[in-house]
Image 1: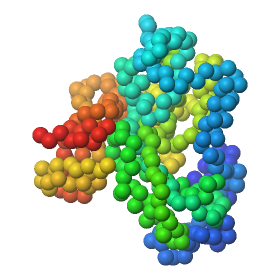
Image 2: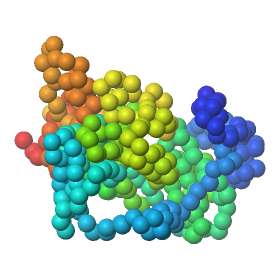
Image 3: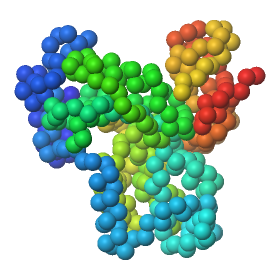
Image 4: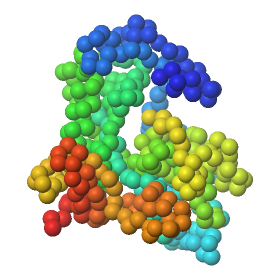
Length: 281
Length: 79
């Protein structure tokens, strides 16, 4: 944990190590005793961090797009990527052809469908990540709490329910299902550390398709085909990465130069075998 | 939506007893270029439909099982 913390500090993040007693002051509902099978030994606290409501973030981006004259064509399906003489010149859609100098791929878990349109493959396997929410409660949890080694995290939303995530069944699937095994695994873990929640009901669960690489890192930048750029293989990292994706993808699309920050995520790392060595989550 | 995998030694068992290896791929011939080996290792068809895939019965007999499974419906073809 200290090594991870050092990495974060070197990357310019503020990070503090907390003792169990310090954590307990911030998260009173957490059990820091020796009762859990794996007792809490410490925590990293990122004071500048926070949570954002996903709908609000999405509509914020949509408003920004509208302001800058970007058309969002809802219900328009790309059926073909027009690849003429090794250069992408547009897309075919269910409402006709759209010519474009540059086409950018950012389709989440469905990236292999785009690969098929290009008669190629991506280095990903698709699998659904599952999350659940509980009944609404009085506000009691002020922080987003994560147990990375146990693959679970929780936060209390403005509505008062807890979002508890997240897990993937250990196989490829294109079905957005949720499984009892995954839900019960997280229910067990949350009640280990938040015993007062034992009687709280699960209200809803859902999942989203994630395209995962072997090194748990995305593929950004050149595709090897002129006029086509990639922002795929983000796996289960979620929408928190989207501002950075947008910024660095835009820089690459506009200048043709791969920004330093995303060079490690090149597609050709799977051929040069420079896989990203550190798994973040 | 868990599903059962028919292990030839142990019978129909929960998929959670197995480790998913991935879609069946043909390895390149000996002496092939490194690019072919990287393609084989890292790049997948990743189909939303029927595919041949390998599972290792890690919580069972330790044997390998091949299935033909629809990754969108989890239906397994019985052979």
